[in-house]
Length: 141
Figure 1 (cartoon, helix red, strand yellow):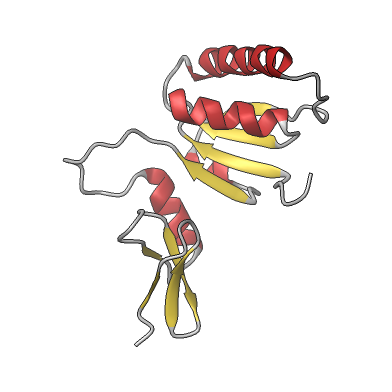
Figure 2 (cartoon, rainbow, N blue to C red):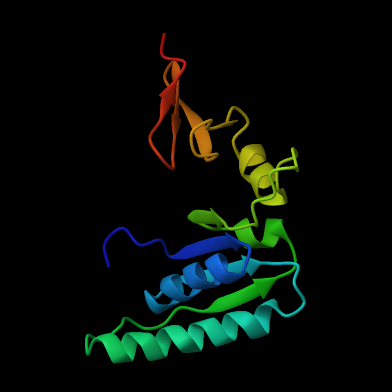
């Protein structure tokens, strides 16, 4: 498949993160998930089984060799070697501190800033900052 990362790191394996894990794994991607829920591995296994069943009911198109889903013990392990990181932590507006995943992403790029539009990571592009998630640009004056 074109433009599919070989390895992704998922921060959060609940409803949204579990869906991402299944979608990536069924596309042949190696998935590393960090979720502090002690039941994360069981829940992800169930979501992946459901995704396989749904695919088979929807189409007879063959999938590539399935990737693996591995639950890891830290944000650092989840993002290690990942070509793409998807953060799917619950939105808790009263918390003003970044999630561990956001901190790990920002620390990986010393001049990255948070996008005011989508909360994604903005990286320097010349004299501007461009969001890698939504494309917003800022600081280009």
